[in-house]
Image 1 (cartoon, rainbow, N blue to C red):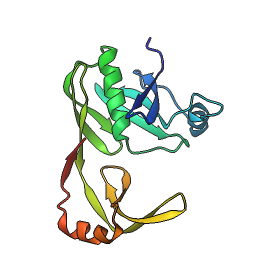
Image 2: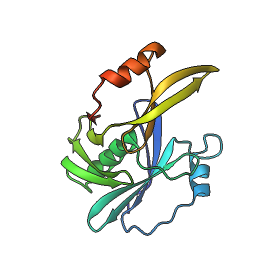
Image 3: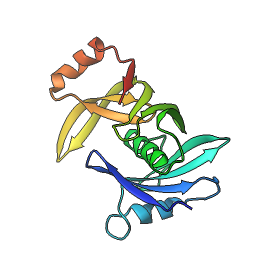
Image 4: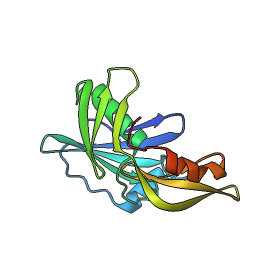
Length: 171
């Protein structure tokens, strides 16, 4: 049996991995909140239940607050590394199913893992991001899950919206 893992990416994201290769574990929002709590639990940005259904990998991603999320770009790379390190998946190009659809990864044995996140969509309307009491106008972008993208110079946001052809991104 494979024991639970935690891993970090980009020196900021920390995930708890729960292997569920039989796809029979149920995880409640309360359990996720308790595990991810930085004071009383392990402390993490999210929990990934690694499942396999009909021979295909599935990323069951939960935010630290227990809510279900479509997927996580950094988390899927951690999941891929786990699968390779534990000889559950050979290195190379393979897919992982998510709530945001199937994601394709280029995952070498030891180097950085790339994920084709799919089509980047610009969602109409403005979005405001507040950081330390300061408000910033940004773009509402989706790559299967929502992102707020703030352009450092707010006056360039509308110009960027009209000029940039957002089609595909590979991280």
